[in-house]
Amino acid sequence: MLQSIAKAVFSLDLTGMWIPTLSIIEKIIRPLIIYFFLIIALRVTGKREMSQINTFDFIVLLMLSNVIQNSIIGNDSSITGGIIGAISLLGTNYFLQQILYKNKKIEDLVVGESDYLIWNGRLNKKALEKNLISTKDLMMAAHKQGIPSLDEVEKAELDPNGEILFIAKNQTPESKNYTEILKRIEKLTYEVESLKASIDNKSKK
Image 1 (cartoon, rainbow, N blue to C red):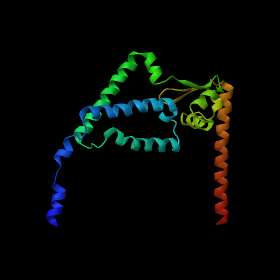
Image 2: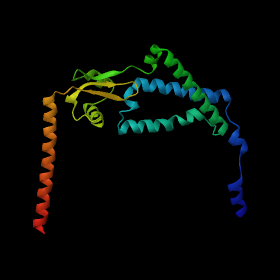
Image 3: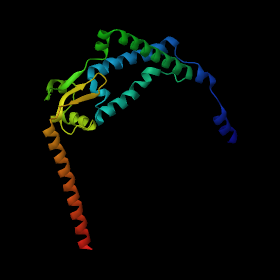
Image 4: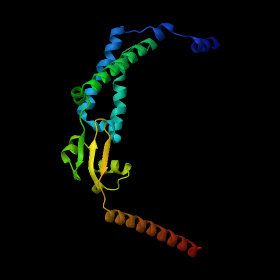
């Protein structure tokens, strides 16, 4: 019994650990095919996959990584095979970045161009539909950047990486004072309600 346990703990399959079961050329080609497939797939499905994802998008991306895993590694789980695949991916990515950096037309074709979701204070419904971004999604993104309402947005740009950049409208001194007054009223209302609740609790005791 102890001998079997010791064998299971200390035995090493050096052949399986270091020698790939697939040819080197196949280890290089497999990840490259999946790499370019994902670039095309994510380009077609839109920039939303990059940043403004919801629960369903997250589940799809999570499952996608598991689905393509076997296609990348095949029946090979060796360390050497993994290193070969990683080097081929990193090398291809570096080479592609160099091409995109030097050629703007190819970059626009592969990465895509920016879309204006809001222009001159007006929603661009075609751009929203194209990128599957609802008004609610846009509002949530605006809140994250400290903009309380879409009415205060002059422009909203969806860049190729999926980030939404907002440019707020220039507020006049009167509108700034009005906004400040509203904030103070909300604060006073909250303080009055808190004080009232405190008095009610004391009276009950």
